[in-house]
Each structure stands twice: as C-alpha cells, then as structure tokens.
Amino acid sequence: MTGERTLTLRSADGVEIVVRDLGELRAPRTLILVHGYGEHGGRYLERARTFVDAGFRVLIPDVRGHGRSGGPRGYVDRFARYLDDLELVRERASGAVGLLGHSHGGLISLAALTTRTLDVRAAATTSPFLGLGLVPPAWKTKAATLLSAALPRVSLPSEIKPEDVSHDPAVVAAYASDPLNHHVNNARWYTEAMAAIDAVFRDAGRVSVPILLMQAGDDKLVSAAASRRWAAGAPPDLVRYEEVEGAYHELLFEPDGQRHAERVLRWFDEKAPS
Image 1 (cartoon, rainbow, N blue to C red):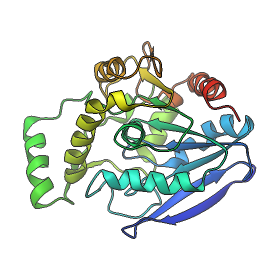
Image 2 (image 1 turned 120 degrees about the horizontal axis):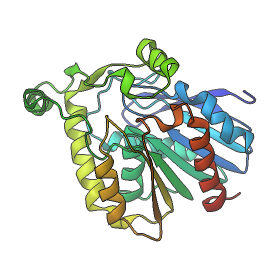
Image 3 (image 1 turned 90 degrees about the vertical axis):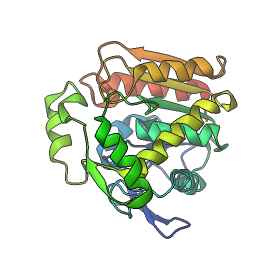
C-alpha cells in the first residue's frame, strides 16, 4: 500500500505503542482506526485501503497489550491509559480527523468523546462494546472482580468463539490462527472496562461531534440492545444508529464488509470533509 510506515510512540507510563501509518503524510484528512480486544491493527490493512484510496491518511494503533505494542497481553491498570494513548496518536494526525472504533475500540472511542473531549471532526463505531453479548459464568465474573484487586495481571480464557466473529470461513480461520491475536480476558481489564461502560452511558449527553453507530444485528459478542440504549440516550441530532440485520460482530469482516466500509466512508465524507 502506498506510503505504509510504522510509528512507535511512547506512552506516559513508558509503554510502546506501535502505529501503522498509511497513505500520504500530507493528506487533507486523517482517519484513526482503533481495533477490538484480543486482536490487532494489522487485520484492518485491507479495509483501510478504502479510506486511503479516498484521500485519507490512516493511523491504526495496536492498543497497549495487543499486537506489536508493549504491555502484558490484554492488561490495563486503568482504562484512562487507553484514552491517553489515543490522544498521543491524535497528536500525529492532521487535517480533518475522523475516528473509527470497533468493539472494544468503539468503547475507547466513545469514552474519549464523552468522558473527555478528543479533538476529532466526526466518529463512527462498529459493534461497540457497551454490554456483553456473552453472559460469562457467575464464577468467572466473581473471580475477575476478586483477581482485579488481588492479582490484576491474571487472565482467564476468553469466551469468544472464532466462528462468532464473521460469516466468512476464511476470516474465522485467520482469526483463530493469527499469532498476534490473544484469547484471554484480563481480570483488571474486565473491571476497568465495566466501569468505562458505566461512564460512557452516564455521559452520553456530552457527545459534541457526529457519531455513526453501526451495530451487527446478530451479534453474539456484544449487546446490540446496549448499543440501542446508548444511542437513545445520546443527542439525536448528532448520533445516528444503524443496525445491520443478521450480521455477526465484525461488520467490516463480514462477506459484505466492503459495503460497510463504504458506508463509513460516506459518513466521513458528509461529516468530516477536507
């Protein structure tokens, strides 16, 4: 892909954040794309082409504890670290800036736009993590809560089944075998994420930029009902909710994922023109 580079940023607490930097450095628009929990930004290179071809520079950080970035896998001591890291990436962007977050990256994005005021022109999320689609066993929830305080770096096996991420068998196989993915849920991350979800619901009225919330209708990993509730509590003139009937969690990696990428592109063309 033209102009593909790698940035390595250092967070305030010393963790290295690796960022894929695509497109022309002086492009009039920048898209920051934040991936989900347990995966990494490299999975999005093909979809990023849609935005690069449309004239965007695209920055795709590997979230701390994921992919090629530093930190124990899946671990964060406090959710605010993710927001600090996102602001570091934002400092490298230029022109009209858009923000796209998937799943856990959607939660990070919404937290940055509600509990903080990240400087972007517009945002979109796909299947944001605003509630659990999978109900974990009660013992695991209790264990995570206890471990978060006593042994915060301990992780438990994930409940995610690769076949639930997409209807595309090739995507499922690649997800399951990708060495940069991890398949655990960290104890401290879990309690921090639950607290972040509460804060994002509490502060939904603070949204001040246009947001497109695209939700997979047959999502088995996050709660579509929670996405609907959040959108209903946000400013109706700024937040647009669209549900894709029958789709699995990873809208951009469904068999018709290109169509969804183009929908997001149209949103940014409308709300964040150069």
